[in-house]
Image (cartoon, rainbow, N blue to C red; front, side):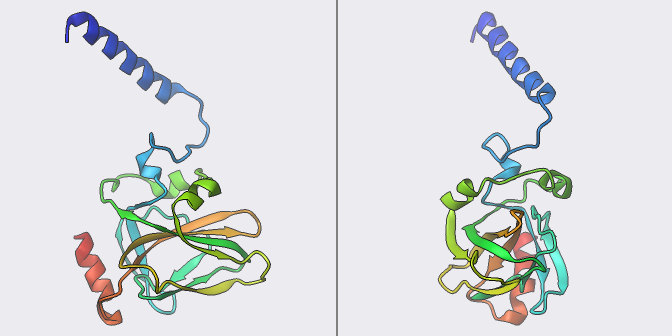
Length: 186
């Protein structure tokens, strides 16, 4: 690379970075330019027991649950979803574990981020349509999912979208799942 090409490349990168940092201040949208917002990204899990009580967490969970409760986490074949409001749709997408985003303030970032439902549908493994039902608790049958990480997106009848991360473990007995998940993140 000669000096002229280097200067040109440096100028383009500087303009791109300056424009990115000084551009409009709209809420970030999940794109390839924002890997910390990828729809299938799982950066941690808030673990719960069979009644929904917290039992700890692993990683830095990229979740926006609102008042939504999913339990137990980790689970085997069934997970309960509870909220005081009524559900419209629930989508379960395959997740990819990634520990590279430990320093991201997800509570702040995700409060200002919208995942377009058409983008969620592109990667959905399971769909539960509940629009014509008045339900605030549902047990989701996950027996057709394989062991691994997943994201659960819940669209409320109000239009709000909440989401949480789960781990489905088909092999480990219930009493040992939390310990196995913790060791997987250490």
